[in-house]
Length: 396
Ligand SMILES: Cc1cc2nc3c(=O)[nH]c(=O)nc-3n(C[C@H](O)[C@H](O)[C@H](O)COP(=O)(O)O)c2cc1C
Ligand code: SF4
Image 1 (cartoon, rainbow, N blue to C red):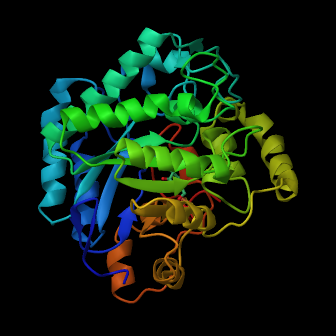
Image 2 (tube, rainbow, N blue to C red; image 1 turned 180 degrees about the vertical axis):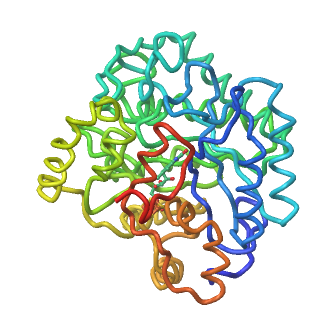
């Protein structure tokens, strides 16, 4: 079943294995893909991945990530380079989906060159500078930005767009009562909280022929935030608005070990790549790193470590009819088959396993039973300073 040719929102795919959206840190200053990124994606495609979802691409200047060299799609001048990317992937008969995002308050005002914006000014533990609460006009501008980005994506030859509606970014904050404390028609009731995403989906449908996918955090581990019951209702509304596929994830960057789970905090990487730790004097690190490693096993990590969104995917799948993609700690081919055969989800999506083994899909097809990634999360820290890479065995 995993390797049967099928279709996903009308797009032909040669199997049910998807490279989940992964920030690669390989865009140029304007946000266009570099030749390195094109080579990387061509390699995934050549090695039998069913479909590629790009790393998140910002829809506007004030929606940019603090991570260096993010993809951006808010200027027409980048379209040609994106076209080179889609053509390279299509030359192996593999579809490619552009993930589009606005980082909201999960960025720093320093990174975007102006005060950051959000539905409400809620403090972010990693990016504590104050967010400006969006006015109604500014919300409409953001809706237009998502639609304009999708028009560019269609011109560039993408097969679909995926709205990043999870992990604590702007759309997630609108959906979640934790991030959205508004008292106007954009906050409060579920209907109001969904308004922005419904208008974006409808706008994209009006202006393009692209399928629209949505990635959400079905649970976000925040007090009063997203839970599976409200996520089911949100997904029903997404479907009614015209959404064509839903990818089920969880968590936020603030509790990153929930979105991409790991047994231990990647302490060595924290001290190498995350500020302020990365700038600590070497002498201080000599004490701080061993101390951090000592308390590391005592820090409680979210459980389970594997297949951690499958139950929520199954619940959502029972309540909507659009295809469901599941991501998160999926490593064993036996688990993938089990998810599909038992109707828990329709497609399997992976991020870290493809960072570790970019030719993973071919290996699984040829009989390898498990992905080699050990879920240490070092790659999740390296992106704060450098392009994404697997540090398995290289840092410790
Ligand atoms: C280095 C890195 C970059 C990521 N970039 C994105 C991104 O751009 N968009 C997104 O939706 N998720 C992103 N994620 C989250 C993954 O897509 C995925 O939801 C999460 O890692 C769990 O899947 P996994 O266990 O297969 O890694 C990223 C994760 C990592 C480790
Ligand atoms: S650094 Fe490599 S092994 Fe560790 S989680 Fe990332 S991809 Fe997997």
